[in-house]
Every structure is written in C-alpha cells, then in structure tokens.
Length: 317
Image (cartoon, one colour):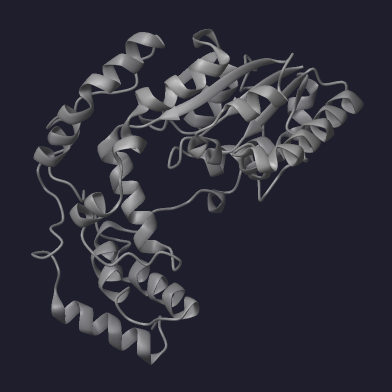
C-alpha cells in the first residue's frame, strides 16, 4: 500500500483540509485514493495518531491499520490518506513505522512562520473555554514552551529519521493560504490529483475561525471571571457583534516579529535547504506595519463595562 500521511502542523488549516478530504471521499476513490473511515475522530484520523504514541497502544494501532487496509482492499484503492495534526506531537515515530512496515509512505507537513503561529495559538487559547487564557500574548509565549514547537528542524528530522528525506513533502502554509482553496489545491498537488476535477468545498464553519483582533483583548479579561461554558460562548458572540466591523490588527509589533525571525532563522533555513522548499519570508513593513494592538494601552475600561453589562443582561441587543 501507498500511505500519504498528513501530520499537520496545528494551526495550518488541518481541520478545513480534513473536512475537504472527508466530503470528497468518493471523488478521491475515483483517483485511487482512500480517505478511511477507520480511525476518524470528527474529520481527522486522530485515533490513529493517538494510538501511535506509545508501546501500550501499539496493539490498538495495529488493529486500526488492519482495518484501514481492509477498507482499501475492499474499495480497490492502492493509495491511503491519513490526516491528523495530532501526529505533530508524536515523539516516538518508531511505532507508526513498525505498523507501516512494507508500505510506501509519504509524509506531508504544512509549516507556517513562527510569529503568525504564535498569534494563532494565542487566539485559540483565549477563545477556548477549556483553556480560557487571560494574559497577554507575551506572557503566553513564556508560559508555554514553544522552543520545540517552533523548531521545525527537530520535527522534520524526527520523521526523516524513520521514513527518509525523500519521503518528506514540506509545504508553506503562508504561501498557499494566500489563495482561495490554496491549502486544498496544494495538498492535491502533492499527491498528484487535479483540483479542477469537480471537488466539493467544505462549509466555512468547518474551519477554526479566529476572533476579531480587538475581541481578544476583552475576552482575555473576561476569562478571569468564573463564566460557565454557555456564558463564555455568549461572551464570544457579543464580542464578535461588537468588533467584527473593525479592521484586523496584529497582536505583535514588527520588531517582535523580527526578533522571533532572528531566533529561528537558522532552523528555518535548514528546513528550506534540506527539503527544497520555500516556506518562510522575513517579516517586513510591506507585510506588517508597526500598528498593533497593545494589551494594556488599547484596552478601554468603559467598553469592558459595556460588554459586561450586555453579558449579564442577556447578550445581543
């Protein structure tokens, strides 16, 4: 069998891509590719990724892979696509390599520049009721150990060590996300399937949408309160209603971006040179001016009081 394993990374459109692959299972099968039902959690193969992490779950991994091969044989599909950004967090690839012994494997990874990844992760951690992060993006950076997450050389070397450099396909999320459906098109390009062959597009709700920039400043403060999950979701709706019409603003200054760029320029260059790709463009004034939201100075206590009043009074007017 030929396996095409999409390992994320997180915050690179994986959820949208998985829904795209799921709703196009029949079309993919016409081209000899199976997006298996086995191992799915939501639209991605997270159960397979989780089972591949340790020797204790290896029997479960083997069982899942047998079921995947059974699906492929039944449908006469020699090519199998697995997709889960949870593969990114696997640190012992040997279990998956053992389960795929005798198969041809291509590893597909989407990478994005570290500063935009940090902004996206911060947005997500503030937005999720489970995490309810309540501080600035700078404290977030120090509270979470991003050194390993941002070190793409380390990630790529892990997979290269087991599957070989020729098996790695490294894709720039920043480049392909600039074009409508660019992530879908680039993935199909990697597996050599034409995009213009009648593929369906997923609904926009299947992507993990970010909050309006200024909403983050206020939701972070609201996260210090003991809000229920329903209240948290109501707060998000109020904030979207309040700030959706305002222009998008960055959470990092151009100088902060350049500091992150300098820190990871070496590992990024290694990835580009080793895997013959062009993933990263240095932050510049053309892309980012120095207008950004300051966590303290751009926070308005009167606006916060208004939002609190709407939240306690029932929400959307």
